[in-house]
Amino acid sequence: DISDEMLARARDRFAGIENVRIAVSDYSVEPLPGRFDAIVSALSIHHLDDPGKAALFRRIYDALKPGGIFVNAEEVLAPTTALDQIYWDEWERQARATGAPEEEFAGVEDRAQYDKPAKLDDQLRWLSKAGFADVDCYYKYLMFAVYGGRRR
Image (cartoon, rainbow, N blue to C red; front, side):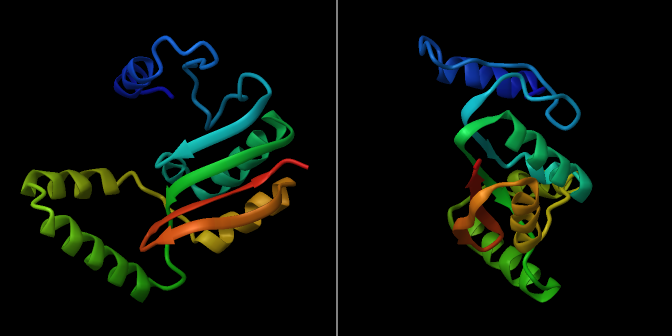
């Protein structure tokens, strides 16, 4: 990560755990530092453009040990713009039902300008093209999906 706030949270969360290494790195342009059994990402890769996502998936594949897995929990586009609107409307309805403050919704709109989500099918195809086996979507709800694959 390159966010000081997120790195501080990670350091707190994993304090005292010996097999966790926190690395400051911009994965969008830098090689991944090491060889890994698993690489996991959540709500981050959707900030890259489509060619950036495909290139990152290739770098992730290269950074995994044989048999290693990649899992991504991510915001994705629906197959159609009509479904995108339905999903966002339902998400907002559910979020408002929890009593989320209005400031939270304004923050979502501000952050959305940096979002570049891609269709799930495209991302699964990019994973396969990068060399991953057993590529699949493990879970999907509205515009959120968990998907990944395994290095051969």
